[in-house]
Length: 86
Image (cartoon, rainbow, N blue to C red; front, side, top):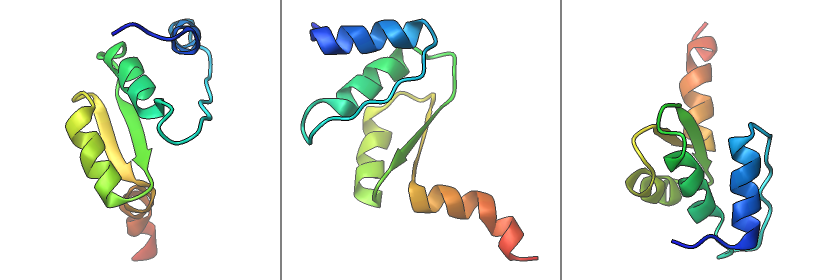
């Protein structure tokens, strides 16, 4: 896949270890770009947060195995539940 100029800039910043914020309209390729970055980082664990369960389920199928995909709600519940039971 040939990267756009913007995607190439993002990839270069990512490879340098820079913090990146991707802000774009719907269907602009944000998920594709995140998938590309995840594939460049196979040796690292990556947290992917999605807005709802159907999106999270789709991302689990699309993203590599080094990605843990949650909805924001399920992620928060998983890590705060032990504190709620006290």
